[in-house]
Amino acid sequence: MMMNTFYLKIRKSIDRLTLSLVFICIAFFTNALYFKTGSIEGAHDLVFHFQRVHNLVENINRLHFNPLLNTYSFNQFGSAVASCYPNLVTYLFAILIIILKNQVLAYQSLMILTNLIVLVNTYISFNLVFVGKKKEAFLTSVAYSSCSLVGYYQYVSGDLSAVWGMGFLPLASAGLYHLVKNNRYRLLAFSMSTIFLCHLLSFIIISFTFGLVVLINYDRLNGTLFISLLKAIGITILVTSIFWIKTLVILLSTKLYVPGDIGLLYPIDLKTLYHSIKSFSYNWNLSIVAIMGIVAGIISFKILSNVLRSCLIASLMIIFFCTGFMPWDFFAKTPIAIIQWVNRLMIFPELTGCVLFSVIILKIFSNKLAKANKIVFVLSIFLLLGLNYKLQRNLYGYFQTDSYVTTEHDATHSLRWTEPINSYKLKNNDQVENILRYQDISDYTPSKTISVYLKIQYPDHNAIFNNSASFKVHTTPIPDGAIMKFNANKSYKNVELPFILYNHMYKVTLDGHKVDTVIGPHSLVQLNNLKKGHHTVKVVYSNIKLNIMKIISYVLCATGLVLLIKPDWITRLKKS
Image 1 (cartoon, one colour):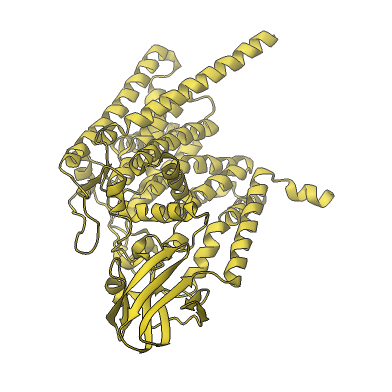
Image 2 (cartoon, one colour):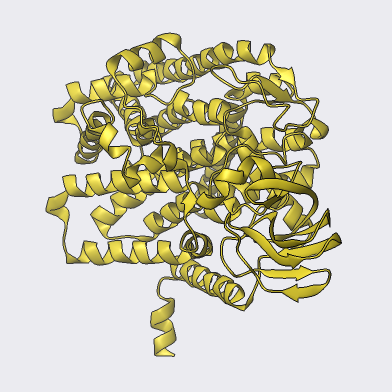
């Protein structure tokens, strides 16, 4: 008996190892042609996110592990992007860069790890809901990880944080299932906290989606479920406090230019959907596999389980919500505009469609036709990987015509833009360095700064006097601050230096002497009664109030993690 148990454990270990190796091979395959280029290919938001990572790397190298401002990137004038964007994936990328010393290799490694996370989470999550359905779980994980929507965020958008949000959606869905069915809340709290710390928009969209699913299952709502839901929400709030507290400090300090201000909300229609399928390219509409799954789900609705019915209904509601039937012109003037494009809502219908495709196609060939079931399973895997390879081939043609970035990216040397991706690529650290300082995107800049944004950008860094550029300032970035040296060509009653102040929680010194922190009319450092000549100004985002807030966020986050890992901790503490 003991021998049989031993062999059973060995067999399980071998199965898990084999599955892990297969997933790693698939993760490599879904990035195969991208890696063949030997470089980082241009994507819409690549510069933006690379600058976030660069700032974090520079701070970590100086043993500053939680930067609140972007001082080494984003024009080096103290942008608060570091406080307003979740950084979990950014930290992972930064660690890879520090270890590998090669930013191209680090990015490619992160691409593989990203696909691996989607594969593993989807497989585990499926098994947590549909116990024993290993074939369906494997097929779903391959379909979801290789879909065009994941590829769009990876290659066209360049937003790997959004892919991680998609990667933890299956785990969050499994957490919601166990919350509704068994009143278990920890998996939901863990997955939603992770999504929040990866990609805030994904968190908002998934929360909205789960609200729909809960309303569809309103007959299951009761007091016990409500208490479990509150526990999940409470733990999520505590764990994520390490991010949202510093964000609130910025958001409540001054009016900002936020991404939603552009008001671009594009509803989908059948024509757009048809052309995206016909072109067979990476896009953020539903993939062919997901569409097939949803259509099959509608046809076989009566025989679906309650779980799949709920997911299908919610998905159909979201798809309808994304069409032109909704008053999107009106929504563009509301806080909903922060999602920018309604296609972002498609992540849950994509997952649902992949699940339905896998479940239904294998259900057709049930155990009565076991041999046919295995053949269909294998053919489906090859079909999914073949479709993904076709997507890669279509994009690979654009990669061939891209040019390398051999000069520093600034206002006079902008990166070339073509559809569907930016037409540039980076093959080594030197070329990556060319895109890490200048930034023409003004997200989370104070609204008052926008009128002088072009004047204070890297590399010019002009001082501002009477709304015009005055003298140039040489800026040396430091963690959460800067040292600015300049030669004032005359005496000034007041002049603004090219460093943003979001509030009064800054320390300012002029030639080694502390001076009052004065926020100028453009939300920049203002110096009063400045004498003619050479000067050195040091600005640091730090004071007692800010340090206390940081400590509070660490304590709350640690408390949330303890409650997540040891939910009975408070009860034991009371008994002791």
